[in-house]
Image 1: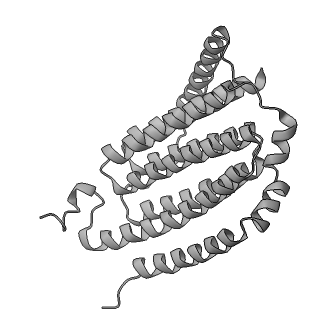
Image 2: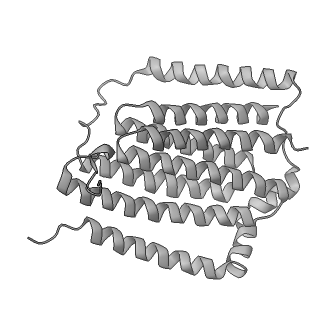
Image 3: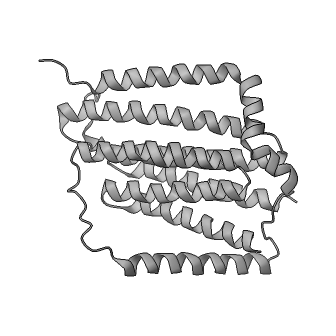
Length: 169
Length: 101
């Protein structure tokens, strides 16, 4: 039962963060909502026993790509720097409690309609998501796409540097 | 036995539609790129849910590749935005109209 409430909690936070990103005025706020969304999707990966992908998501997506977005937003000076003088604790606690209540309500509605999400057979699922099984497939059957991804990342790095370079006047 | 999968697919559809609305209705081009990232995440959630449902690691391999392609695309897209910003000094997508007839 705890796993099911956890699914509903992560799902409501993900949707709320997506809507927050859609409706925010300043691009920095949009980026922060998207980071919350990425963390909740990583939590959903963990409920699906895909631990390797969850950690890769946090490291690469939330840790590198979103930091890159925030750097560019700050570099283009689209927003005044957000001031962190006083953290509005009321808003944070209100948002958390509101998402918790919504998740609990969705769980109650789903359990009364008898359509709860329950875990897929944990034994088989746990071995599919581990780094061992992914590594076995990745380095044998998908070795060529892996090398091509390496070349793609090299091309993207060179392209990004060339595009953003200041032309010597 | 399909109930678990349906919930994840529905959540993924919601997130994908929120991303599409962001691409259609926002004027800041950086927020449009972030909405594209949200769409890619929704697709990743679908792939992982189906991979765990069918017990096949191929879906998660594809998620691995999608994340790396998304990283490359975000880097190049932001470099293009920086290059455009040097000339036009705006990131409002309605002002990018040099190709307009």
